[in-house]
Image (tube, rainbow, N blue to C red; front, side, top):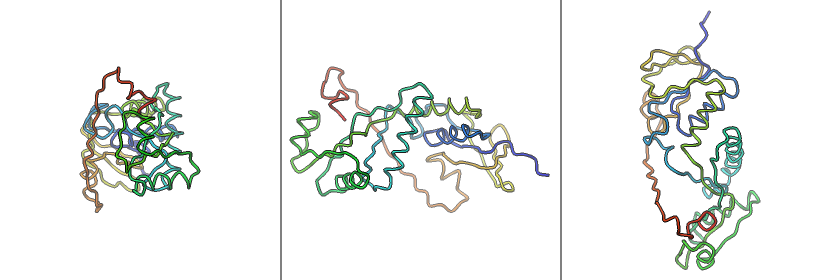
Length: 243
């Protein structure tokens, strides 16, 4: 008789994706372990800093809209369960030429999913939002439900609630190796060997190394994010004037 495995699932990487996965599995009653090779709220992954945009009218393709709408529900639920303010909705502007991919794609998503939107020319955009001074050939589409999330706060909330639901969390503990083990998996960390039914790889840029024995065409791209500190007395950048 096969001995029971240590966990139903092991989640490797506790950034935005891994922490959310850990929380939802733990809330469903799974025995789960979260492994993170760095400290909480580190700057080496992609889930750090002051903000990440969320928008409903996905210009890339309308098929994303239902996924984003479900995400809005889950972020709202996370705020209620954690008691933390994590999401700010102050609108968003999708700016480009009228026949460009961003504007056309945004309007397509809005029309296919019956979402409210408004299109402004350059002059109207500057009048309503003084910080923006567009070239005359550009327009802006307003997504009223766009806004931003607190990425570090979201990760912390997911990890905290996962722990409350029974998950085990280990920071500063990297995954060294993993191998199939019957119908499950066996992983090795600096603490020793652990078995689980499932292994979730949420290691971001490290997934290419973690999955090096699997023929996946994973290409790592660096996306650099900037934040600008503004004078607090500059009214143009208040939440109601700067979507």
